[in-house]
Length: 317
Ligand code: SF4
Image 1 (cartoon, rainbow, N blue to C red):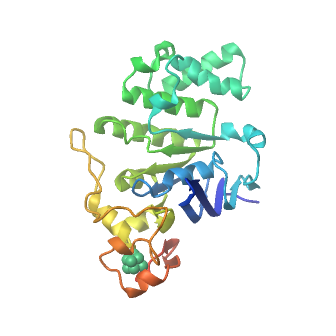
Image 2 (image 1 turned 90 degrees about the horizontal axis):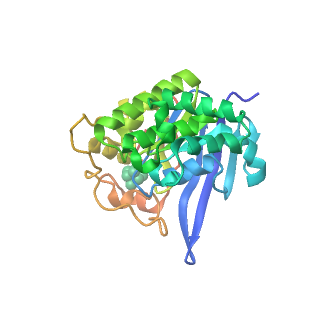
């Protein structure tokens, strides 16, 4: 009997764009247990958001399998997936964009409950008040429209909407990157409290490795759709073994303090190559300070360098 909540096995996804093939995700595998967090980190264009959507089956999978609570959901139709949707929710980077400007906050949260047939009208109203209170908003917020709330309040609404239906798995797609630094910490702490209280599993997507470290049990580092390093969070920070991970660590060393400037990935030399034509061999070789001849010719296979610590680099051992 599977104890894993989610298993992603050798999953690939490509998109056809104007006759060209975009390699978004290549043969990625991971497992996630109830109450645990997998952090997905990488630059924009690394495939982390696509991977989050594949895990929820919001996108079709080209190759590989996705299992939820031991059940293979790879080929399920949208209709077949509908009963599972309340168990698998998403928190978006821009909550305003995901809310209807003409719908009150209370109605937006209640909508999910109606779709999933949860509660009577009065039960639902009660549930909306309770979830708003749980994310730190007064019940009056139920009657507000999105434009009347701040960015931090809107993200709390986004979290409330995801949690109202009682999910088991939540994909948090850069949920704090659009927020002021002081609000980021509050939202991260809230997500952590809710996880402990409700036993939620998170896939937490971010470009800031420090934010991911704070919340994650395990971290996967993505580069051009490939996982280049994956390890328990503590191990990854103690022994970052892929040159890309090492560079990410130099770029972003800590969760920003309130009032400080947002940190960037400026230490990484060069641009991320086009996913339409990834470089030969190791796709990081044009930017890697340690690249050797073999790196241009041969793609490195992921191999173990420690307990549960996978690295795809010819030089890592
Ligand atoms: Fe750098 Fe080569 Fe390792 Fe790729 S395989 S990360 S190019 S050393």
